[in-house]
Length: 419
Ligand code: UD1
Image (cartoon, rainbow, N blue to C red; front, side):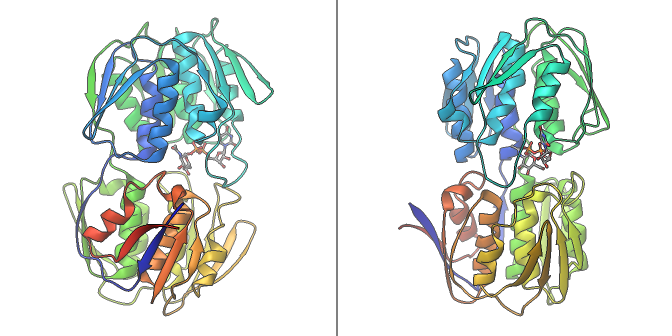
């Protein structure tokens, strides 16, 4: 067991290069199952969720090797269509492999996915999507059994723009004969990135990022390709909020500012200033932060639910009152009692929080209960007066690679220690 130990109050100054995003890499790794070839992914941070997805690929028969920060995935020979309880339980994105296993091997057996406990997280849209393409899917004894031997392209209308279901159905459509169309898909940049990756491998997908995605089925994806997934927009957003909370001047390199427009607009209104040029964003905060007033999480291009906890930590020290509405996940406020221990004034009911900004937070012993909630606590600890310890950091490691080392390079006093 490990924890973070933070001596808060330092300004943050310096440059950070943002690496590829977990939420882009996980579907791309699932997409590798479709490829009868060798994929080299460049600049891959070793989040623990990436290791968990690699475990799934290896169990299917893929040969996966690291070459420094590059990941080489050889999926020419696959020998299993099984995702075990042990590996599926490690991450929610294990379900993202359903479409590609089914499309490539025509049979799939997946244990139910695990992942952060932030709400019900149903998988009905994934399963219905496969059924709409003609797969036979049964759920029995904690497993999903699917037979895809009679799959054909078709039209699928998603009730909700689910990121994972959109990606899963896109992957299923790639090797399924005929045309698959997804209406009301999610429009997150990671979906565009998955389209770009799969098309580079020989798929025929268009429309990702818009209201309609069209996939023309092809016989096989058989290219050896090199690909760099998009920069992590959630790590980028987290660091922008850290800069706002701690003061100083941070420059983030290798970013796409347009992916964080909703956040940047809010931060600009609350006293932050930005220089944005090419693939760099510089943030500094010359005056006391003003609260956002109202903020709600929404599908892209709205404020991402994955930044809700960091934004809450920011509002806790901003001048004024904020009403924060979480629209995506019903149990995503587990960081609230921990922030209250640090002196925050927060009340919540259902999916709404009222945050009255305080001058300061104070260090305390707190615990991360999920990945992004943990990141919010780290930011609170960095800005707080005094010492903070954060347990449960295995959650944070799922999506922030060597977070403490990254923060130390810009002046934070944070270390990892055994407990
Ligand atoms: C992805 C991201 C996660 C992010 C989330 C929302 C990855 C690996 N994870 O998760 O970090 O927080 O998008 O931006 O990319 N839903 C259903 N039925 C389904 C599927 C989803 O009702 O079959 C609901 C969910 O409960 C939720 C909403 O749809 O309320 C959005 O979830 P979804 O977009 O599917 O999230 P994930 O793909 O799991």
